Image 1: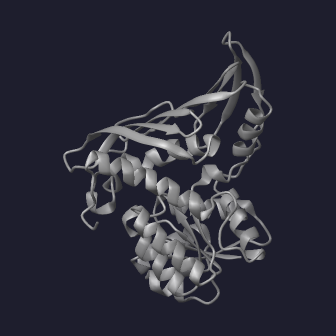
Image 2 (image 1 turned 45 degrees about the vertical axis):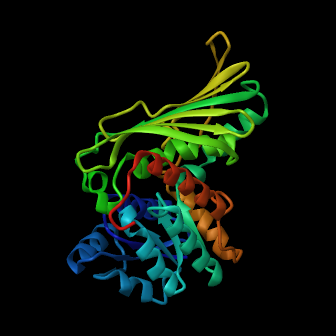
Image 3 (image 1 turned 30 degrees about the horizontal axis):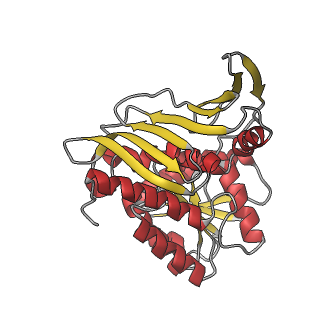
Length: 324
């Protein structure tokens, strides 16, 4: 599987490093594209990428490329996904999948029409930690689960992709998407209600979010996202006989189980990893081998469900992007 990376920013670097260090016989980092040839060449030299393109069109048109990882800002995902699909290229699109649900629907429909693999690069969905946590819940290690608390925050309010509305900025699409996925991974996608409050920046995008999801079976999730500074990134799943504490919901480092007396009873072992990005790449490899158009870890409907939640929240908050 020859992988092309579209856009050469920070997240693209992590993916390049991942594929290089993965050293999988069936996965090759083959091409990179940037808006400037100079940037593409520098990236290619640093990560030993055979092909460097000064335009995204050139990457999409390369017949050797099997999968394109889209690492551009949220606002550009729709156009770049469309470009790649027009060339019948399988795509792994960085989260948030698009800026809104309508865009996501259109991209997924186009992929289905062309019988081409399209999947969202929400890495936590593909990680082994997900099934480790799910199995612990299934085996009753915390009794019957009823509530989740999760947060994610980084001091990134000065970054263009966060404060610029035209880049689909704000904490929600960049950070809030993780606690939302965390809650829905373990409590499902059957929602009764979605409510939230945000604190906005001067540019009108959300910088701090409090989100409450109520599930149809009566479970609840209280979620927090902030671009103002670091949060502890923890996730806690509360059950009738104990609770599970996950250190760093963005890439779980530790999963501990406590009983009702707050005594730690167990720590679940997590496997070593390259960066954590490798699991979504390997899932794409399997899907392509099997001729699938979606990955089982993040089915198309689940991507749409998450986009729907974020649309609903932005509507409540009056956060609209200039291109919408």
